[in-house]
Image (cartoon, rainbow, N blue to C red):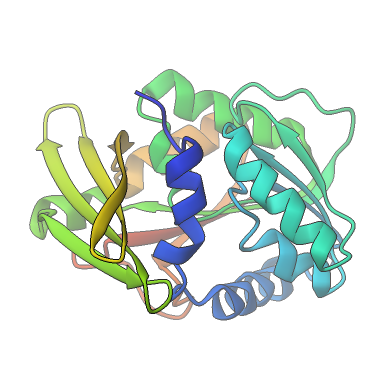
Length: 253
């Protein structure tokens, strides 16, 4: 089944219109200043519709974004042109990129790393990221914390977003947890309603991997990262606990 296909991509920004990208970019910059202090170029892995990339570009960073969904990238490109921002977007697999350049920082936000569901895939992203970082470069991402997923198991959810007086989007999320494979199959059903009539219905199944602190440290250390810090997202000053579903990972070369 397609992941982030055309209909889901078109609904994406509406579904996450309450996500505070500005605040998250404040957090990203706080991490940059605390752990590097000299970040000017950023590689954004799994950039999606450009939620973080556009804000960071506006703040003066040079951004290159990569995503596996051309439909999501098309939206990001359209938004960047509308805001007159110079951002390069590339369609590709984040575990298998070979760019002829290095970056001060690599970011991968909104649980993109949790879409790497196998050990080889996680290892490849970590190693590929390391190759694209300058000396003393920084890798920042967030992912699902396995301790929290197993403590506070995922549940079925329904989200309704009003587009205007006549249109709305309803998304039904049904998670299927597999504790043995450390995965959650997240089944999405997205309904578009206009004047109380069903206009479109889209189904997508996203397989997600939850990661445990010690295993992600291992993957990063094997890839060549030396300094690794974990904390809740986006709370740099707090220790990570089994109740923090979203885990921040900060690694330096």
